[in-house]
Amino acid sequence: MEKNSYDFELGKIKELIKEGGARRVGLQLPEGIKTVATDIAAKISKETGAGVIISGSSCYGACDIDEKLERNVDLLFHFGHSETFSFKKRKPVLKEKKVFFIELRSGVDVKPVVEKAIAEIKGDTVGLVATVQHVHALKEAKMLLARFGKKAVIGKSRLKYDGQVLGCEFSSAVVPCDEILFVGSGSFHPAGLALYTGKRVIAADPFTMQIGVYEADELRKKRYIAIERALDAKSVGIIIGMKSGQFNLSGAIDLKKKAVGKGLGAYLITMDEISEDKLLGFKVDAFVNTACPRLVEDFTHFKKPVISIKEFEVVLGERRWEDCFVL
Ligand code: SF4
Image 1 (cartoon, protein in one colour):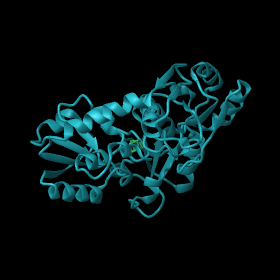
Image 2 (spheres, helix red, strand yellow):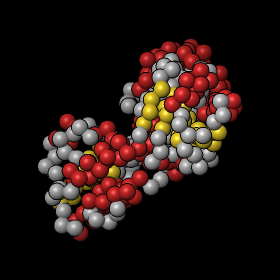
Image 3 (tube, protein in one colour):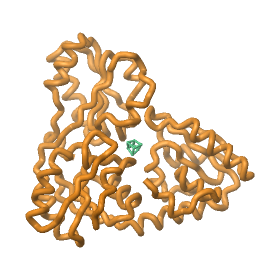
Image 4 (cartoon, helix red, strand yellow):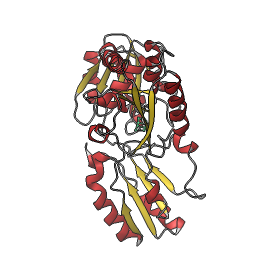
């Protein structure tokens, strides 16, 4: 990740601290840019006089506000994500607004990597999407694609910006198109886009200039195998994610009732982070993840199957497996 190409909006942060008379502030950064946390903390502290506490906990999405830190600071700055519906729906920790999202807009020119990606595009029309870091550059990318005879559609999103996607929110990719062109880094978003739209996804990373191609069928096959492995389970652990925007107690309780109704043993298990060593101790045959809906895809190598809510409904005979990918 090119840390220096991001806009950390330090001017805005200093203003907010001054305006709010904040004496102590918290910083929460995604994993890839925690390396600059101490530099930012030192600058803020020096230029505003406010005390700064950095969240050392993991942070993977806008769903993941460090509420323990939020309770202990006057303002919390959450970097790398935009405000989402899960944040708007949450019960506020305190009445006054204390969390500010710093989106980390990238200053890197996306045109070179989009031009490189054109060689991989087979159809005439692409759905054009990006993470929040590059969403401001989509119109420029669209004009470039038009010059090469490709029509780009930037779809409306349930998120803050048209064309924006999250690992679990792809509404902007549901547009009439042959393929999807994703502008951003990593495989989390493009793999999810392919899985849930059923379309071929070309991923263009403006930082590394790498192009990746994700085929929906291959990814769906892996999920089918996970469901198949869970079909013989006599007991399941239903995982409740304790990250603020992932907590789904009522969904987990409903699933437990359904499982027990089908004669399975079912147990509710809370977790902050899901890892194989944390699951190993539980005497159940499979796990159902009610936290981040995308995490199950990382767990295909675990000894016991980990499946999503919809996939578990397939196991219970309540859903067709093709319908697991309904957005
Ligand atoms: S629920 Fe998962 S995919 Fe969605 S924002 Fe949170 S970490 Fe990302």
